[in-house]
Length: 84
Picture 1 (cartoon, helix red, strand yellow):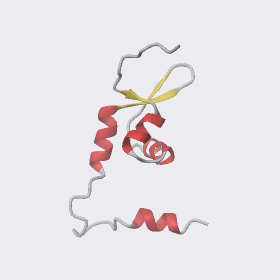
Picture 2: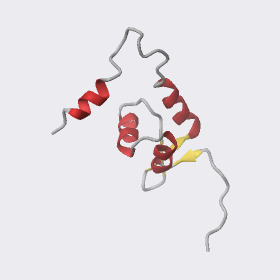
Picture 3: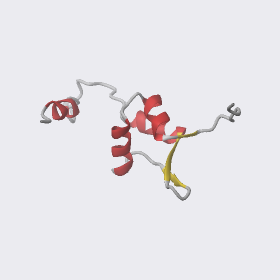
């Protein structure tokens, strides 16, 4: 039998990836490169991501006008296509 838990703003990487609808590897990469904040907890150094940090990371990736001059938005997709 499981006990009811109080909702918390702290997410595991699995929960954060599901909420952002991205893979966990992308999430870990964003943490490693400093684009997404995360906290390490306990002896096992488990990662937790605050909902607000996740929302800010997603908000920073918003493309307002894909036709505006700037970095090519297809860069990520084309890099994945070149993988062996």
